[in-house]
Amino acid sequence: MNAQAIHRLPEPGPEERAHSERLAIHLREEIAAHGPMPFSRFMERCLYAPGLGYYSAGMPKFGKAGDFVTAPELGDLFAQCVAVTFSPVIKALGAQADILELGGGSGAFAEAALVALEAAGTPPRRYLILEPSADLRERQGERLRAALPKVLFERVAWLDRPPEAAWRGVLFANEVIDALPATRFTLHQGEVLEEYVVTSDDGRFARTDRPTDTLVSGAVRHLERHLEQPFADGYRSELLPQLPYWMQAVAGSLEAGLMLFIDYGYARHEYYRPGREDGTLRAFYRQRVHADVLRQPGLQDLTASVDFTALAEAGQHAGFDLAAYLPQAQFLMASGLQDAFEHAHASAADEAARYALAQQVKHLTLPGEMGERFQVMLMTRGLDAQVLPQDVLLADRSQRL
Image (cartoon, rainbow, N blue to C red; front, top):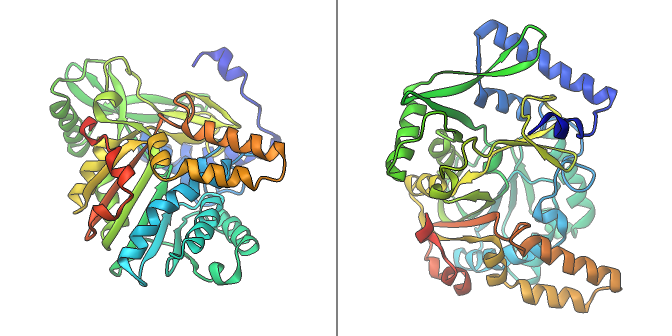
């Protein structure tokens, strides 16, 4: 991104600047003590440092007042459609079926999904939210307590870590994988190098490349074997070498049920195509996307697109079967979006509400919006995939992986 584009970003206020500088001081101290910092560590600190990271601090993140808008923030249609896929799974698994949402955002998805599942006669035994941010957990609790009937709210519980005991149900993650700390790599004379962060003489953060360890090098060589060609010198991108371990940690105890991931990303051949020579890493700040990921740590969201081939590999390595992979637009249509829209449209209070519903559908389904940029992956274990909506299974495009 050019300097002019960076200049157009809104300027943070004094309190935001002071907050960012507190995190920057910690980062500089760690670099001074331990040397150049792997970018993955820098990203992890910027997002999750207790009390200072983007997701740990108390600033608005979701919706028009925040830095980006997720599908649940647009309205209830998204969650109602996802609930159509959840419902037969809960019915098949019986009274012990739970839902585990990874990262509950504002609580908008949980609210709409629980209402839809209750209306369908398939509420989960418990609705668990794995939320590491104390601030977001408090906001979710306030919202759900105010919005849900008492009988539904009592099913909601928050977790500090994934369940250790075996459980049955649905694991759901919307825009979660893109926020896992990404490792940046490049190639120089055929050698795999890893991107690190250093400080310049004036205290600014800058990038440098250093030899990497066998884990990252092996992960890059795995990509090359799958792509059937080596990366060109100077090609730079990102990957998640920790993804198989993360998958086992969050889903290893799910003995029977469904995992459903929704995120922006690509199949591997598209992700690492030759023309995408600087990867997909980017920052979101006040509804604007830009490339200066080292700018104002703690104030902006850092994110990279998802390699859905890697996600499928991680799930299969953890013992899950791939049930379907398809664009969000096709998934929502196959999960009853038309019926949900028509029902909401018929009961809308006025023309403004009907217009808002139409705009919601456009954002969720148009190719230039979320419809094609976002992908959906469903994986099962101990569950016959045929219980899932048949239209979802028929729209499967997993051959693209």
